[in-house]
Length: 256
Image (cartoon, rainbow, N blue to C red; front, side, top):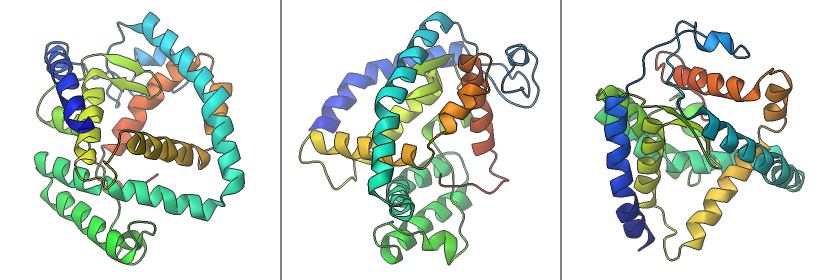
């Protein structure tokens, strides 16, 4: 019920965003120094999108920063004191494994047929031999590395441009195209999630996933901020550099 309602609510928005992406395609800019605002204009090797909404994005970034420091980080810190790191790692494996079918479909849509098969193989192996994905025998026993594939990347392969950079409330850095992909991927995952009896369970599981992931990376956000003359620019550049790294499928990927 909630998935059908969400689909109806987002359909028009997705169409508008995709049209905007195609009309406002991003040009490749440069390989950037993460902490330099000037390098955002003169970098080479990484792909960037324009930032026409910078005043709005900076305001959302400031709100997200407060939410992280006042809510998410304290919750993740308390969570980490209750559960040991190995248990939290297993929980992270579980949530990552749930996304494997969507990665397999996106790989297929991108023409990466081998990666699609690998993602499906990981899902089957980890679900059966890894106790519903809590362990990762696909990586540890069968040497099948994680595969990265999102619908945002699929849209890129299909020739749809980034559109523009946007900071999404609570979610953080993205682009018009990639945020569209995130929404589509999220809807796709809910079609096979086992908890769909009510609207609260998916939200609870999503919050648990976010807190668990943050608990495995405590201090990283504050460290990057402390090294940045302008944290907004640092996180904007860092987003594009990390995205390029994850979409370089010639390099080994990590599930973290």
